Amino acid sequence: MSSPPPPTRRARHVRPAFRAHPRRLPLAGVLRLNTPSDIWFKPALSVVAATAVPHLTLLALDRLDLVMYTMAGSFCALYTHQLPYAARARALAWVVAGMAASVAVALTAAALAPGAAVLVAVGALLAAAQKALCDATRVGPPGHLILTFVSSASLFAPQRLGQVPGHLALTLGAGALAWLVCMAPAPLRPHGPERRATARALRASAAYADAVAATGPDGTGEAAARARAAAAAAVHAAWQALHATRTDPVRAALHHLAATAEEALAAPGAADPARLRRLADALRGTGTVPSAGPAPLHPPLERAEAAEAAVPLWRRFAPGSPHLPIALRTAVGCALAGYAALALGVGRPYWALVTAASLYQANLTLTWSRGVQRVVGNVLGVAAFAALAPLAHLNHAALIGCGLLCAFGAEALISRNYWLGSVCVTPMALLVTEFGRFQDPGALIADRVVDTLIGALCGLAAAVAVTNRRAADHIEHALAAAERARAHAERALSGPAPELSRARRRLTASLVALRAAHDTAAGEWWQRELPGRRVADAEQAGHRTLAATVRGGTRTPEGARP
Figure (cartoon, helix red, strand yellow):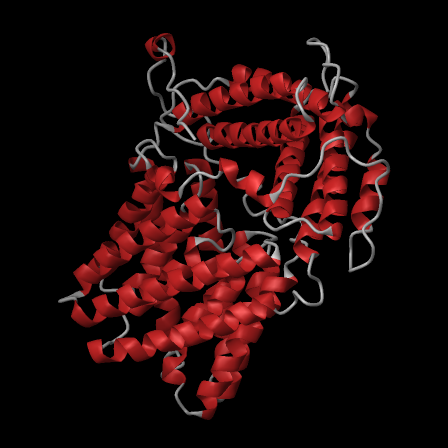
């Protein structure tokens, strides 16, 4: 796929000077609780199952000092729950391989590095690489954070070079168990992830239809725009899930429902939100996929056709890539945090490093919000650890039980808001340090609070200092891509059905990417004036064409809205 053309000479000539973002960093709403994820229990139960078996085995062998190495593999059970099982098998194998590679580098550095200063540098570079790869591959939550947590802790674990192969084998063995745990539901619900993705698309399209009905036939207003962007993203995600594996009768029926959600996205005024929600509710369980009426106009794409637009991984790190500034922020922020912790004499500088790594989101505004959430969650989390410590110190079995409880709570709560999950993550991280020997809770709490503050301050300072001035350029590229996709879709209106189907998918994906590029740039400091009006016009034109591709015929008049 060719790269989008750069902005024209005229566009570069008239660019205003870079300026600080006029909006203040938000506090209102940062701690607001959200609706929990519809699959929160899956990673929560999976990580408990994948962790309990190695923990109890090591307890029986009286080798709980090795827990850190098995937990590295067990934590892989947190990933890929949104993917269909065939795609999950491949992606999760890569997650386990990435975790093993991270641990191998960390343990080798721990054995060979001459001092803590070198270890901090290695940890910062590892964190940046993990962040960039997880963002580029869209591996999904929990992203790079678990990898960074494990590798940073491994860096500061006493290590001899001869121990590395054995410790790495423990990680791989626990990772293999995590893979089996995550794949275990496949025989019972082989189409579960695709059914959930399709149900989300139907509900999001119903919400958009409701928003349009509430704002009048024009469907204008911020609420309708947000609902439209959410519906487009959900429909796009549903098609990606359905295209991840080969089509069978159940997936063919799900294709039909995804097309129904897409029709509602393109023409919300004609949609029946109640019917869309009934169809979504009927996808629960393993029953027959409900019929949405006549067969869709356009046949589903085969997996090979859907993969044609995939961008090679190496192209995602080309100069100007949106992943590079965030990776640089991560490297600088983690290094600053680690060295500041060393300078202050804190016993565990990797906690400060991990705190800094946890902050970095798509833009500065989101990074700031994550920083507030992290500090609040960690402060409350050390209070939770103080309450749990007497119970955990009764014996090693109680310690394991408290750790598993915290792991379950973290995954159960983190989708509500990051700070709420951190209330459980913090005591879990503190309990991990006690598997070798019980420690003074007061010292652990003091170190954790100091490291949290150091990491948050240094991480935010790096986010401000390392600018992302190319964010506005990515909007220009996304605008050009959306215009090309719209033109292609209009040409395909008179072409064969499979070509129109491909054009419709491409147009939907380009509109999702355009909205993401605009939202990312809007949250950055030091940006030129953003083309908000052009983005809105491109989205409206794209959705008009999208409506025409769904009907497969007459264009919506230019003055009308879908």
